[in-house]
Image (cartoon, rainbow, N blue to C red; front, side, top):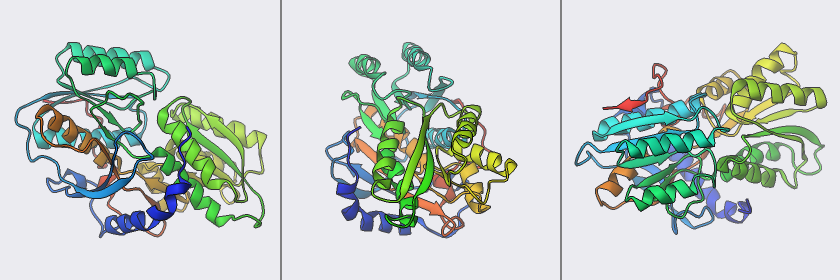
Length: 368
């Protein structure tokens, strides 16, 4: 991952700040995104698309009011192990219901199961799906499949994780490089060069996933030149047991670390482990994306902060993009919500419904 973020960071600061102010609104109930009027929603549009280094503009996203027919859409997730993907699921389900389309969701069970994801998608297409939305396990590993599906005239939408295929119809995702950058920048500002070295353990997620490679590049760039010393970088699947073991091993090897930064699952696992070992005051915890567990951690003072990519909105936009392509209607090819950091200053005021599923929402695999 050779993308640079600092070159664009200065001119984006005012833009992202403005978007953050716009999004930092009066309290919404956690199911606010279910409202028929979740839109217009401020997003960034990359042009040319599919290149995170492209210039982007901020627009208010306006989805279709209704689909022209009950299209059959297949959605593929890497897994449903954590509340982040539950939020994306909620966005997918809510928008499918609002637009009046059918939706079938399959999940591969984890980031080591690329072949499972491929076969599940192939089965969807063989079963008559008219569009496919993919949260990819691998940045490059589904490119042949995408080309095959597109060759049949079926739209393919890349949601959340990112794929390198040039054959995609559209992307509904943000730069995880910038998510990682924002997390790194947050702690780097507290420890500028010359202030005294601080040891940090960094857990970017599953090896080989596009979002993880991007997040790692952004984080490492943000802390460069500060007094943050990344003493350990450990990759692993985002299952809680895997992440807990990684944090345990790191604490054994580096008992003097002062920060644990990583996936939301890492952060949630670390909070309990640090409490059990009496290290809550010694080690600070931060995530580089947002879940209900991270929300509670920040609210309770157990975690510092996390950037949010408005996962619910990304799911909604992906479904709208699919319908627009199917109906030959104008659409933005590369869309992502503006990023902003949530900490103790705005934890009580940001729009929870754009980032989190409602408390009573259960994993849903079909809309008929």
